[in-house]
Image (cartoon, rainbow, N blue to C red):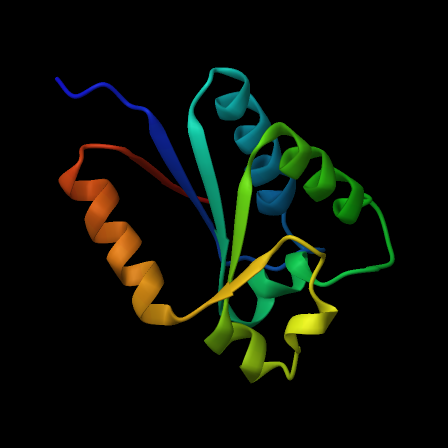
Length: 121
C-alpha cells in the first residue's frame, strides 16, 4: 500500500450556501497538521468565490484561508471559473495561485497515479 504524503482538496460548491468551504478548510488544517502536503483547488463559478479577497459575511473565510496558508497549505484557483464570474487575479487573496483547467486535470492524474488522497467537498 502506498503511503499518503499529499492531499488534494477540491471545492466547487457555493461559499455561503454550503458547509463545504468550512469543511475544506478544516480538512486542510487537519491534514497539514499531520505533516501532509496539502493543496486546495477552488474551481467552478461558485467555488472560486472562496478565493476572493475581502468577502463579507460569516464565517470569516479570508482569515481561515490565511491561517491555512500560514500552516503551509497551497491554494489554487481555476482561471476558467474566475473568468466566468468576471473575477480578476488581483481580486484574489494574496498567495492564491490562478491556474488553467488543464493544470487541474494534470494534478488529478498525478495524485491518482501516485496513490495519493483526493477529496471533493
